[in-house]
Image (cartoon, rainbow, N blue to C red; front, side, top):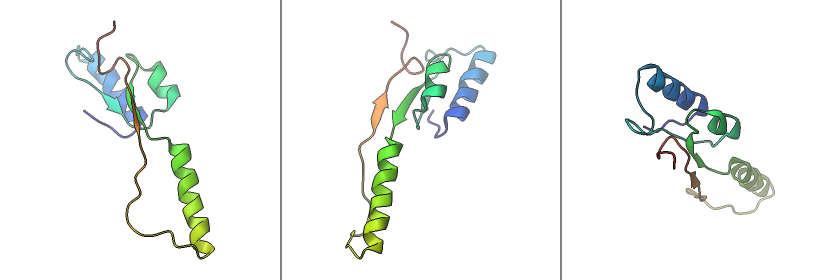
Length: 94
């Protein structure tokens, strides 16, 4: 199960626990933003994808400024790497 907002993932973890389900034994939960306040304090800690949103914002702003200055920024999709940060919501504690 993948959600894109940390607070929803926390809700999934809490609901699973309330229903007697084991995370990650019965289901695995993965978030997307890797917001440390939510991921580290979740029970179990939430596995999440870190999209480096700060760098993404910098690059987006730079492209806007370049376009305003008449620089050819090209067209299409520009991809940036993401990092999977594995925590207890997808693997058993060791």
